[in-house]
Length: 181
Image 1 (cartoon, rainbow, N blue to C red):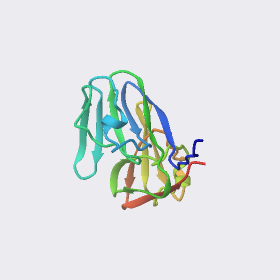
Image 2: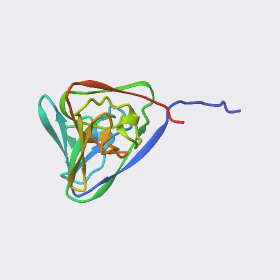
Image 3: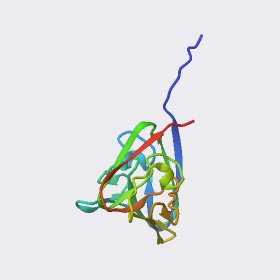
């Protein structure tokens, strides 16, 4: 007789469309240590990822069968991708859940994403916006911006698997409570 096994862990996948040229993407699932080799184990040779750090600028990683260097891409972070041809990446991992999901959004520019795979208004995701904060989505080769004036104008709605630039006046923690129903 088999015993029942219960788990609170939810494993999922996200299909991310990667166009030729530049795009902003996010990983919203935990996979090992969230290194590029774990999160994106297959890519076209020469595909380049650019991760932005507000203190040191961009750091790049190029795919030559493995990512060199093997940067991290954790839930809540985002990167620019430069791909020679359009493709689709399947990101696989555990859905972050809990009452204390947190990522820092520093003062100035950073690249961020939802920490969980959902698409809804930033104000409905408890994003720590202050008057004048701006987000920039990079869609179809062009930027779309939204400014916070008590509400986002126009609505700021990131897609699943999409990252965005943030320009904040003061640093804040983006805290989420999320549970798969």
